[in-house]
Length: 575
Image (cartoon, rainbow, N blue to C red; front, side):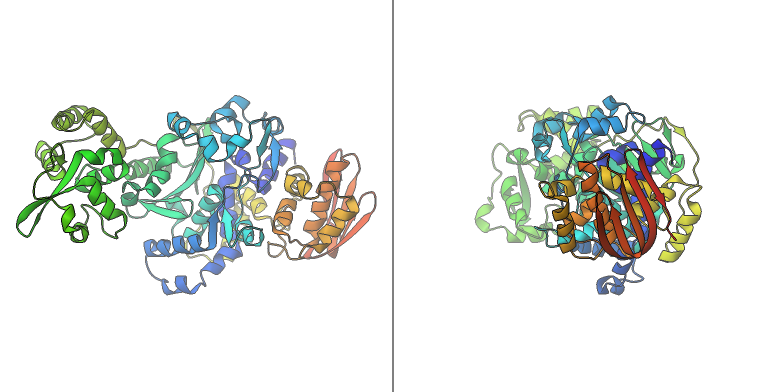
């Protein structure tokens, strides 16, 4: 394996934020690895999903959302996978992408977003402000197994994962559990977030653990505003799909152009709403400062009654009912009599009067002359009415900053997996695609099946990119490290011939003997890189040879001899 391929294939093991940015195939390789995972396939046997068998994908997705919210926390602990150095990372990728392009598009290397992100101090929000020198966190993306294993980690009661891990989990689970075709799932990554767009009904966006429908996207709540943050304020870095990928930096792309145009059309439709009474109420809900200029007028017992806008939104806050939707009358029934007045509150616009004007004048809020007409109508009662109208137009419409379609599209045989296939059929199919589709090949490395992969990428990742195990054993002698590893549980977080990296073994305090041997090798190599290390794996026996011999036991049934020295890594099958 040449140096460039070794860098890419080892990156499929570690899957850091930086690696996924440089090698866009990696993002979908993780989705395919999760689709091969027996862990997610077992979710289909959960009683709640069994009861929904045969129901439509939308109902099953709603149940999946609840399952993921119950089983996984959102993890934003940037120290989970340790620290690295900016210069080290930039040097790694200098042959793939210019450092200045990395800085413009990656949060760990200086990206701060547009004016919005400066206003909210996004680096402080994500905790990036603590890394003001050369040291930066490894922002790694977890497999489904690594996410589930967070329940073993101190401070966690369940599984966990950051946004990219959750989006990959959602994509795989939507396919396996809910029967959503892969062709209908698009992964959308920005420098600070990862989401999926699913083509069901008017569209669904996965946002961390939640699902956001089009109506929820525009409902003006705090949750929807957070969900909007990335697409409203960031350039989309990468779109990944079963047909390929497109990246904001690279001139080449492999996604099917027709599918990319489809996403563009669907996403723009999802991000646009017409101005009506419900959406005006949503706007006021999201912009509380404007509520003081409006009131609602209703007929109660044959008389006109008025209620201040902020008062009615206050009732709504603690209610199941909402202003101007099908439950509006029930909300009004909850309002205390004393909060209604029989006369119009002076200096406030009646929402009903405004909406009547909009309907009569056929106001198109995205049309500049119509916005001027609406601002003029509001001006007697609303200071700076132009700002309100511009804000209303922006609220109801956004243009996603997707990667430019002006690319050199290369034809790669797409991944075509049928929803009715079982897990074995899928693995066999992906195996047959490895020579035709790089993402399929990389998926087996993300999956960590060591009977189907070369070992050198795994070894490189284990001894170069696992700082947590180095920090954990800092200050201990080699023998003490060996003894500490012996105290860990002997269970791997991965089934069968799949292997965890040293940092996973240390973080989750468990590991097969092979995984413990690589953890020890990582420590020894960092301390004495000129000292050769050999690991002999033979069925249940694992022997690490360095300055002395260290023995471990394995249940993986693998056979391999690994050599690590200053010249690199070599792997040969034993037996």
